[in-house]
Length: 131
Image (cartoon, helix red, strand yellow):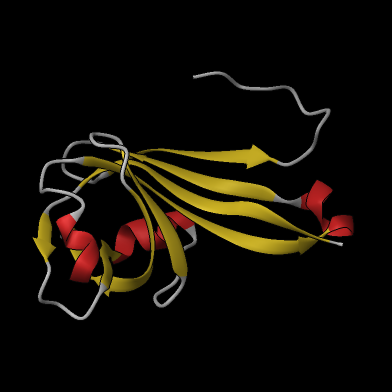
């Protein structure tokens, strides 16, 4: 059996631009992609903390160090620059691999710079860390 598991997450990123005329996707600073182990063209779920909008799109690599989180295409009508978002990617793991899996979580500041890196174990009996 395959299980859909969170692989990576960028937590509380700030939207820097919206462009409804662009050909779709979310542009993300390459430094954040590396830190969260998210790849260009990978599907992600974007969750807007300010208005509860949720949408799925794919990633375009933004310039490293730019802090860009750009929502493009039709999804740009769902959010606004300055909104905080959570960006999550998932992967399918064979049940036998789940115990060895840990998600990479990246916390960022108001300029989309990494402030903390976390690993969330998928073990049921692992101690829980609370933030």
